[in-house]
Image (cartoon, rainbow, N blue to C red; front, side, top):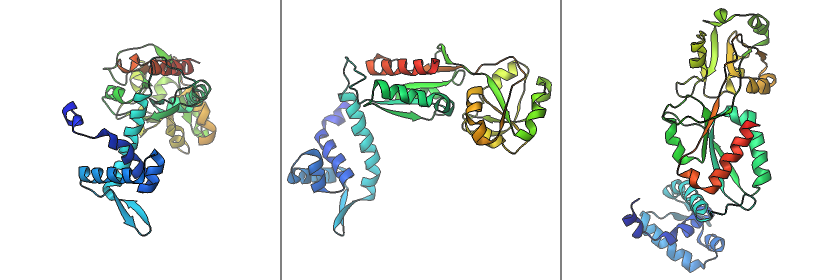
Length: 299
């Protein structure tokens, strides 16, 4: 919104608006923000005039949000959270005291194989902070940099992202139903070519497929899944092979009822890289969070 438009708004109404929407009542909202009931009632009148909606209506002995107010609630909650993040930032960032809300865009591969370590490290160093892991957006992935503190994803997924060093690498492994595992163990690269595969697809990008093609391995992907962790479960009970990172394969093999099979090729790597918006990187809190993710990924 332009600065001219902001000057026409009474931003003091944000706090009572949030309280009214959350508490669904003037008296409760007044107690929540430490204002008098008449003051909150006056704010409600201004808000009703601004939005052209009652926001709060009587429903028996209680009050309820109008349909419009219900749609406002999640947006106002996010606005209040972001305002809190902005206004509580300081250059002398102290992890032990911060209440920052950090956001990390990452695939489920990292969440399954390293997520526990990241949460433990964050809880130990910044016990009052919170973390939100969000799924990777569709192409162009680099557009997501503006909405997260850090982006951790397989290399080569977006050619517009600047190259960075690899933080986490893993071998590609195969998973197979136990009934097919023994036969699959003896297959050559030529025998794998043309065999049916289950693989992960990020909006049409199949991690590993391009690298395997460079090695002369052209996998026939019959089934795609939006996550790495779904692959072993889709393979179970079929004659298909699954293409997943070795760490994740061993973590989920028992639960999915599949067997991990060593791949008959020269150890292709699944490299992950960490990216951050250059403007966000100026924030000392974000720099600290990036270092934390880097340490966990490299462990």
